[in-house]
Amino acid sequence: MARKVRNIDALLRQWDYQPGQPIVRRATGSDQRDLLQIRVDMGVLQMEVTDRPDGHRPEGFPTYYEYLVAASFEEGPDFELDEERCSEIDREFYQFYHRRIAWLTLKEFGNAVADAEHSLRLMDFSSANAPDAQWALLHEQYRPFVMFHRTQAAALSELESTEPRTAVEILDEGLAALEHVFEEHDAADRFDDDLFVSKLREMRTSVMEHYEIGPTLAEQLANAIAAEQYELAAQLRDQLGESDQN
Image 1 (cartoon, rainbow, N blue to C red):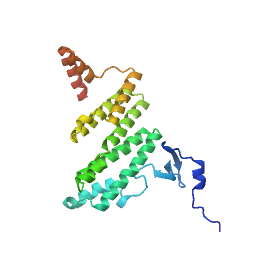
Image 2 (cartoon, one colour):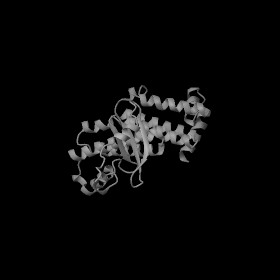
Image 3 (tube, one colour):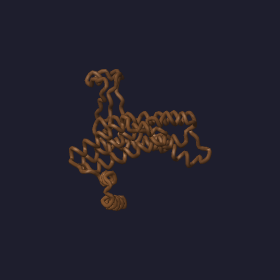
Image 4 (cartoon, rainbow, N blue to C red):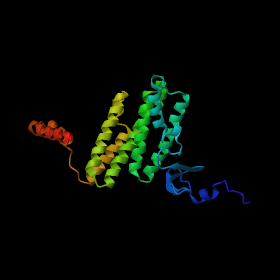
């Protein structure tokens, strides 16, 4: 009987690791299902493309987050995040981080947005039910990073669809949401110096210049008020109100 090969020597020799650079590819499983693979320093990470990246179904649910939501309804006031549940939440955060990086590397921005939104929902839930503030902070410190990825990917997805003005609107919404997070954590004074804020602002400027997009209504309104053009400001305010209702 032939001895079954249990190593991945040939795979690693054919696919070099490059320090500091995500190396990602799509692959196909033995059952023809789609997979993602990331080359890491000492091997390969393989992930599913839907639901949980590791392919597990916690208590029969597509993700651990969905299981927790169902458990919270079922258990009611007795629901709590014990040590085991906290550990499983950490695992899911870590898995979705890796897959989000993979999607961004492959420029599959819609998938990156979906995984970022999952992480943010899980973060909202875990922070709201955290056993203590310190554990919640361990995750909350990464909220700007996840929001940055979500905003960046959503804007790039719109640019792929040749919708530059929508991309600018998404960037503005992302920056406003980030500013709110900084204010919630009494860190508003650090907002303008934040790396993710700077990168989103640079991206916004680049899109505006490349596609020759004029100032938004909100920017025109701010400029009119600064120039004491109050009649024009009133007109722009009305237009802005109408656009918000549509």
